[in-house]
Length: 245
Image 1 (cartoon, rainbow, N blue to C red):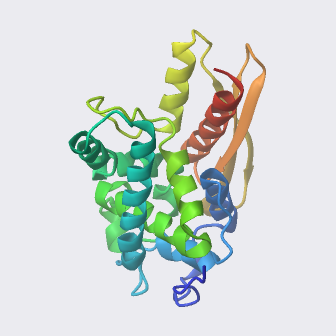
Image 2: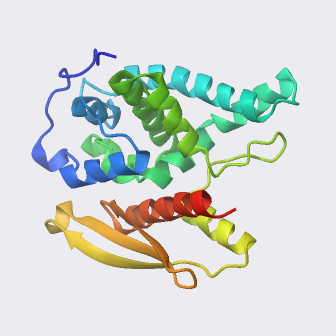
């Protein structure tokens, strides 16, 4: 599908842009490499930063998310009625859930915000992060079509209880991994910094997450140690879910 919004975003001053390595790491975490990188930058751009911001992508991503989540629920909850599906969907796409998912992806460190918004705590503001996640989904849709965006939604919601009445919410990857391991009476993982790259203000961290009793491990990258730990946890959780019951 052609990316109609590409090539229109005004370039940001170098100091305000996320390091290329951090953007590559985000693409690894979401499982999608952008053919049109300008879409990714647009998705991470708040209106306080530039006139070429992410609000149009957010609108598009909201619809993509709704359809993808509705399809997911329709397939997994075939014994539930329309009302139960609607209430569950509303819980899964609400701001609090999207905020948690955005934190797990490490979006706060990658947001492009105006100085005033950044100083006032915009990087942790739930509304800004939820909007950025929807914009990211819209960007993936424009870059590669609905199948790619739907696949991302399924990965994001893989650790969430979809059943009605369960208080479904987005868990960060480290919490989801810990609960998965505890449920099987396995040791908790160890996180170690494997490498740091770049200058102090543009560092990229690489963290290894390992389970000693099985020898399984995974690595993740991020623009902070916390983001890298989340990325590594997400990779290891996916690995475990694919290889163990």
